[in-house]
Every structure is written in C-alpha cells, then in structure tokens.
Image 1 (cartoon, rainbow, N blue to C red):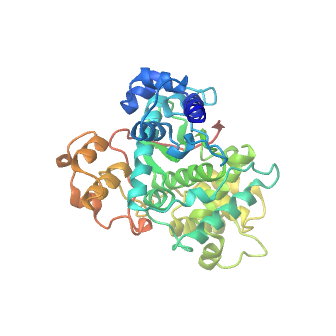
Image 2: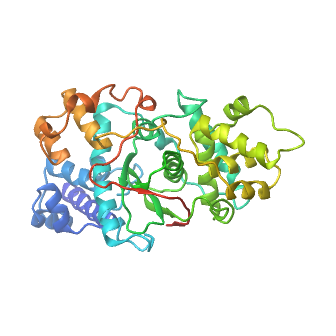
Image 3: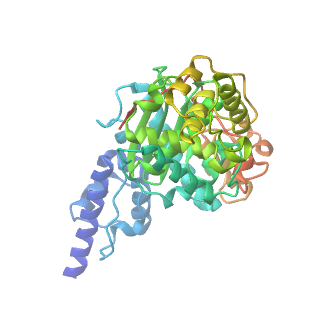
Amino acid sequence: MESQAEALRELGRRLSRRRRESGLDIDALAARTAVPARLIEGFEQGQGELGAGALTRLASALGVAPTAFLHTSAPQERAPVEPGVLLKGRSVGASLSPKDRESLARGLQKAQAFSLLGDLLRVERLAEGFHPKSAPTRNAHRAGYASALQVRALLPERQGPLRGLARLVEGRFDILVLRHRFEQASVLGASCRSGRARLIVISTRIEREPVYRFVLAHELAHQLLDLSDSGITTDEGRFETSGFWMENPPEEKRANAFAAMLLAPEEAVRRELGPSKAEGYGLTDAKALVTRARTRFGLSFPAMAWHLYNLRYFRSAETVEALLTTPDEAPLTGFEEESRFDGLERRTLEAHSRELISASRARELLGGSLEELSLHEAVRGGYGHPGQHPAGGSRGDPGRAGPASRRHH
C-alpha cells in the first residue's frame, strides 16, 4: 500500500512538472480539460486520485503522451510551452504587436488540432526527421543547400519546379500554413512550434506569388533547422536589397539558400540553363538568364539572381547588385492557387468525410457549422498527393507584403 501511495505521489509530481514546463496554471489546465482545479491541485500535492480518462485529457492538453506520467526508467518527456505562454516570452521579437502574438497563439492552437487530425489521416511527418543545428559561421549557404537537397530527395517531386508549396508543406511535413496581416509591414513571416504543433504564418501583405513562395520555403527552413520543441522565429526586412542576402546572421543565410535550392534544385537549373560560360555574362545576357530561370522555377528576380551567383553562373556580387537595380519583376503566377479553406478546415472536412470524426467534433474544430463550407470543394483530391494541390490561405487572418529579413528568436 505504501509503494502504491508513493507511485501516485510520483504521478502527481510529474503532472506538476509538466504543467509548469508548459507555462499553464492549474485553473487554465482545468478549463481545458474539464477536470476540476481542486482535483488537479490535490493530485499534484499527493492527495487523492485521478482516473485514466482525466490523466489522458491532462496529457493531451499539455502536449505529451499519457505515458509521460508513468513511473518508469524511460527518458522523461518534456511538455512543450503552451502557445499563449510561448508568444508572451522574452524570445519573441519586439516587431510583433500584442495582436500579432494573440493571432499566432490562436494559430498554434489550430496547429495542435491540425496535428491530431493528421494522426487520424496518417499524414507524413517529414519534419520529425530533422533536428535543430547551429548554422556554420562560414559558408552558411552551403549548409542550406545541402539541407534543401536532402528534403528534395524525400519528395516524389525530386526535380523541377514545385507547385502547390503550401499544400506540400502541410501534407508531407504536417506544418499548418496560415496568412496574417502583421501590424508592422516589415514582418514577412513567422515560424512557431509548440511540441508537435508546427505553424508557419506568411504576411498577407505579400501579393507577388514568387515572394510568397520564397518566404514560405524560408520559414520551412527555420522549422526544420532552427526550432527546438518550443520556439518562434520572425523574419523582416527588405527582400530586394543586397543586405537581405549578404548581411544576415548565418541562420538567415542558411534559410535563404535552403529556400532557393528547394524551389530551384541545382541539377534542374543546369538542365534548364546549360553550363555557365567561362567568359561570364554581360548585364543584358545576365538579366535574360535570370528571367528565364525565375520563369521556370517560380522565384523572384532577386532570389534567382543570388541563387545563380552561388551556383557560379555569375562571378561577382557586383553583377547581382547591378541586376537588382533593374530587376525583371513581370507578373509570375500559376505555381500557387488560392483556396477558400485553410489547412485545418480542409483536414477537418476530410476526416469527417472519411467518418473518422463526428459532425459535432468537426463543428467544434471549425468553430461553426459544416454547412458553412463546401465539403466537395474542400476534400477533392484528398491528401494523397499534396504536391499537386494549390496553396491555402486562412479565412481568419489574411493579407499581403513586400520582402525582408532580420530574425528574432
């Protein structure tokens, strides 16, 4: 009996530790789980018992498996920081307003539901195969290129242009992609993670499709290479300037290179353009080369110019800077398409259409009635081939934007 009582006290201590790690107080945890606060408090203090159902709900709210509370010699599981707490932390950049933080916290909560539905739909989670690693201080772009090629090797679309990037990020990496109008126009995007919940938010101020694609790929790099179990990064700046590429810290240079190589793999670029000329290119020919490549792969002119410089098509940074004074930014579309539905809506409706969740659970996740959404449009094609589907935008937090990059952790 004494050993059983000690085991229960240990369960209480582990619950208390996970709750404090997440940043939730007892009342907040009680509200999320329908477990009375007095029972949680008593259990944490070694008084009373909680049933398996209550412990399971508590574990789910804290983002850990129920076995995290068990008295075992297995490595202890750490609870991720709760979204609302994470977005109030000191590591969040000053460029985010309180409204921005609230929107990102809501987005992370959506991402939690998105990931849980992913379990039911058996989606891929390629992001779990990557772990944070500091970027090298020298030649950080090479590390970004190597990581991007590693990602491309995991995709059926190994070469050539990537279309429907947002759907691919959601369907193969289990990362929810939303849009939001950040209060500061300089903020291009943000990446957040709280345990398995992963979120990328792109500014709705970004109107040009190639810029949207590049920023999304840049944020994917942060998700795979920079974010620990709980973290956030934001990116801001002026995308068109040379400083965006040359003057950033190593992590940003790595993310820029990752984005360029992911969207325009070297082998495919060389197949399209042929080998570089030993004698180099005049400004007119260089501009034509960049225009041809960006049209093929769906990048902005500045991104492709710097990418070709790194691939040794151009011999000097001065050539790229000269190109940036008269860029060819003719409209370029057809790589991404807008959708009425965000990723959580599509995933919820698909789970409901497969009878994996009830109508009441679908309404709970969507925050409204199923009749408000077109089921047929939402689930056509399903999630079997996310790379073939158009990108999605959030109905709740929309917008547009122009480029940049200075990151805050």
